[in-house]
Length: 114
Image (cartoon, rainbow, N blue to C red; front, side):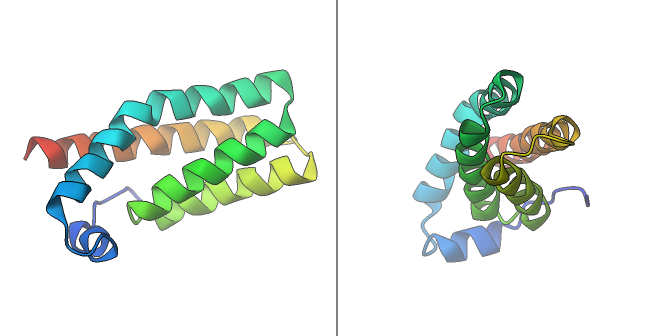
């Protein structure tokens, strides 16, 4: 995966140029990132493919919203694995998505800090 670089103009365009909503969205992402990571791990650890599908779908949307196409694509693979009830190879992919969520979180935190 390519390193994440925030594309603020693209995100703002999606948000109608609203800087306040942009800051609120970044703050919400940062509040939830560790919960998202934990939810993926829990779904895998319990073998709950339905939960994996739902959590991966949520994460795919979060990453797409911040213009992270690579991360969203990885989350989509997890979503499909959950839908198919297939956990083979999921542990490594979950690790990648968790790392990406945190990488994106670091970039978003830096953006908020100015």
